[in-house]
Length: 131
Image 1: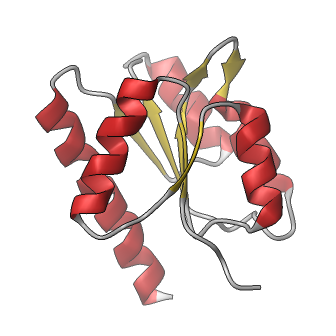
Image 2: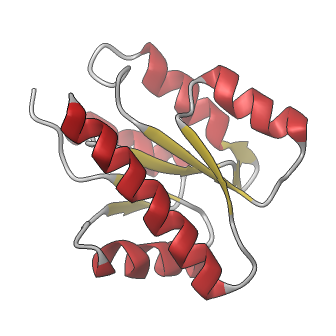
């Protein structure tokens, strides 16, 4: 099955906008979701080529989405990037053991956050190109 555009799942409008602008600069269009239910709908329509998932969603956890994707026949191999403001080792460990490929911090400064996200997407893209 052909994979669709990447999906960005973040419930914070400002962070989603920063990420979309950063990705657009490197030529990566994305579909965006502000909730787990919206992301699930997008994944069911067309599984993404990769996904960027915020860890802390409004009353929910992005880890739920990670676990669902890793269990799905069509989505188990999708590269997953987790975004978080948490630098707690237990949170990082939980993300990686749930199946995240990269865990990156949401930088407070917009330019730094944009550069970090761009680097992460470039890294994921380089891995996909080797397959």
